[in-house]
Amino acid sequence: MTQPPCSSPLRPLVSLGDLAWDVLAKPDSLLLPGGDTTGRMELSGGGSAANLAVWARRAGHPATFVGKVGRDRFGDLATSELRSEGVEAAVILSDEHRTGVILALIDRHGQRAMLTGQGADWELRPDELPRDLVRGARHLHLTAWSLFRDPPRGAALAAAALAHEGGATLSLDPGSFQMIQQLGRETFLGIVDAIPFDVLFPNADEARALTGHADPQQALTALREHFPHALVVLKMDDEGALLEGPQQPRLHVPATGDRAVDATGAGDAFGGAFLASWLAHGDAPRAARLAVEVGGWVVSRFGARPPADAELARRLAAHGVTPRSAAGASA
Image 1 (spheres, rainbow, N blue to C red):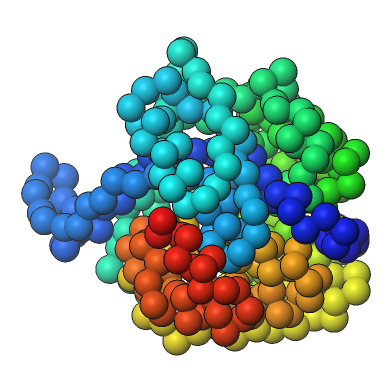
Image 2 (tube, rainbow, N blue to C red; image 1 turned 180 degrees about the vertical axis):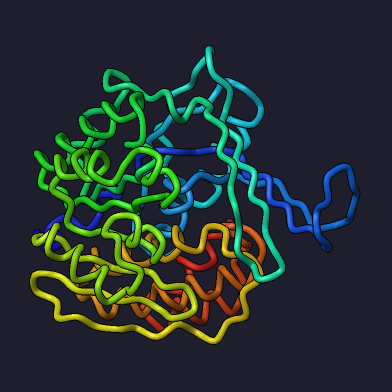
């Protein structure tokens, strides 16, 4: 596994993929066909790749988002939210496709089911990539949403080649166990195997879809066998995280005691915080401990990017991230 480079601390983490508009809905009671109920609803900028860029920036690392949105009001608002977080946005505008919308239905336990509209974020093409920016990245993060179909698969593969050529490390969030199942495990792995990923961030459901093992320990073993050069960071919700890599013995990092309100975006927050920390010092256990704290904070609030508060600042500061980085998240 490539260690994070230390010679150019200002080279950004580039997160490529989806920038969409989240519609979050948490009903107060069971939704019945033809019925009505009350609940909590919120509209905000979202998309897994965009969320990860926000959380990498909140955790202290320069971050740039690369993706495609519609030339419409939702695209303007989503891009503006990114920039308000201090994230650079290399956004391609489409006149043919609207900005994507994601509906997240959240149950009383905080778990969510998502319906993802296929908007402009699914239409990124290789010739639209900001090639110099991607080649100059310190790290490139992809989500599987950029790999499930083509486009945008060709753009994601081209970006990975450019970034690797420039000496960047690479990471992947497998994105969706259901989409992996629909595409087919072997087909998905065949696509992923073409990219020399340094870090993988599956959750327990995605690890099961990729390996056939429901037990996280067995799934991690299978993933390490399939990706021998990668650090695998297995996210297990309220059981914390398991990590193992070529130079990292297997380690369990316990979860926080935060009460789950809404799991939307918690995995993206975990990944962004982990990468920001890992790129700063190369210590995977230390990065995982920060990531668990940030993920716990997010899951105990509503939405993928809740406004930064004193508790978030405290957690970041306890792991060496300055209060200024925490304050910048709400700028």
